[in-house]
Length: 110
Length: 113
Image 1 (cartoon, each protein chain N blue to C red):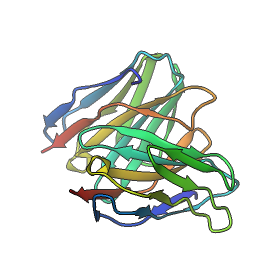
Image 2: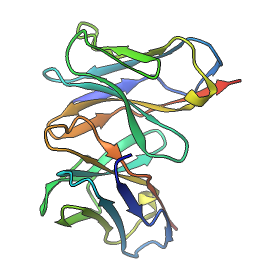
Image 3: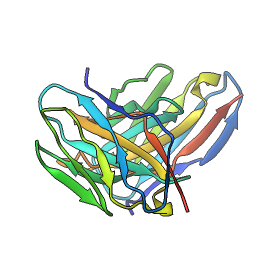
Image 4: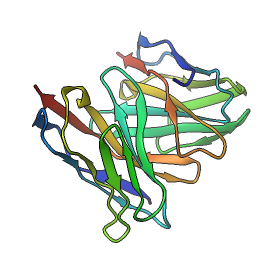
């Protein structure tokens, strides 16, 4: 079945470092792809999405490009802040549901 | 923020007791979902609803039942709680035609002793 695989965490970076969180997917057809973020003690929030190949989703300085040839949707940010510390989930949609990866915890040190 | 509340926010119960968690929305969205979040597993779908009295099973539905008698409320019931059901439970909603964007509630932390 469809699935999402993302890099294991935790990822620890210093403030202003460059961030990449890898995500690959397995799916039939061409699903939409998402990144959700979960801040401590909260539910998930949609961070960005892309609906077709070569689309780039972006929000709050984060970007991810839908790569059909590598079945990937890696999350990047050029300069992270302490406030970016959270758990990040890669996901895809299938029928009426969203399938989530296991999440990657990100720690940003001041 | 989407109007989604969950109750209770925290609950401790004993093995074998019934437990009901409530999700309430004020957005009039058609779709509602129950997930559980566990370390190493991410979010897993338990059940979802695509309308009043219309529900379907998700990935990890065993031991859980749901009901939706009104658009705004989606109840998750553990008929006889087990320690393996200790988890954080999240409700989510989405609009018809926009199911790719889900709005999440604040979560319920359930501990089964």
